[in-house]
Length: 176
Image (cartoon, rainbow, N blue to C red):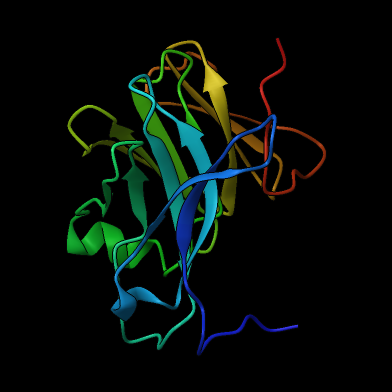
């Protein structure tokens, strides 16, 4: 079933894990109502980073990565126009580095993995990976996977690129 495109109301909600009570809710501006918030991770400062999918007209290119703080601030970061265009209005996965200083986002439709400095909200690395979507913390950086079976280290990971005999889906999880 298609999303409720006309009445979407994207928000980040903070919920008490023990009681289920709503602690707070932050919303994007009304003109961004077709920006679906999809993936989240915490940085070292406790901010919640999120990646989005835009379900509006293809001619529009809203920012797709943002963060929310418990103090009530929610904002989308400014990615350069060329980088934003490469994402093709879709973030497929998002992860924080082990120390929370970096955020990685992927766009399998745009064959792009980005690393963002969480403290400054600035882009620090771009990796091209065909159908790259899965990302998980690895050392100081990230391990990324693709639908074609590639594994590659990103933004400080020392994992050499290799192609395996099987395909990955869109998500990776660090164990241990």
